Amino acid sequence: MNHDSYDHTYISAILNGVRTVAIVGASGNEVRPSFFVTKYLIDKGYEVYPVNPGHAGKDILGRMTYAKLGDIPVAIDMVDIFRASEAVPAIVEEALALDPLPKVIWMQLGIRNDAAAAQAEAAGVQVVMNRCPKIEYARLAGEIGWNGVNSGMISSKKPIMRGGFQSFGVRQK
Image 1 (cartoon, rainbow, N blue to C red):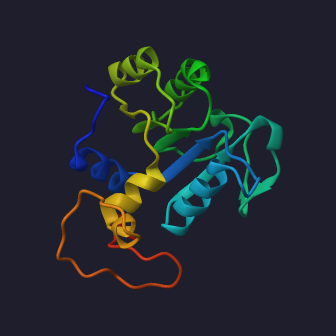
Image 2 (image 1 turned 30 degrees about the vertical axis):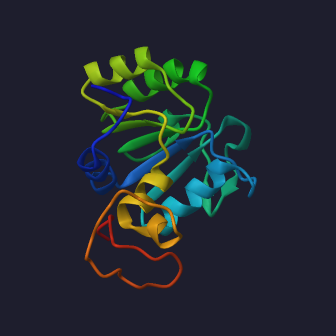
């Protein structure tokens, strides 16, 4: 697969098809990007499991933090990686040892490891690299366009107005 660009339908299908998300490298520090993404995904209805060995057993945004993927007591649909590209192969190995396998390995902005991506895809796992699910969700839902940024999406769909974040409803709750 070409990981330099992704079709809207590929990203949308992933965001609509996953329910449980493990965020590897999650942080309880409110100024860290992993904190923002964790909060955003929780607010959008995803079941989020922070993974960070330094915070294991502690609470991040009301969620128990786990030391490793294998410690999470439920099946994980998507592993979102907030670690350096060099750390990705070991995380992918850990993800591929899970039973059942996750549906998706997602590497955050600036994170890319083609060899690890090929290994995950060979095992039947979808891969996204150098993208942020928070940004992609907001772009596809039209939230970014409301703030004056061209999201590349044209829609006549009226937004669903809810408390907190506004959404076109990429996620079906």
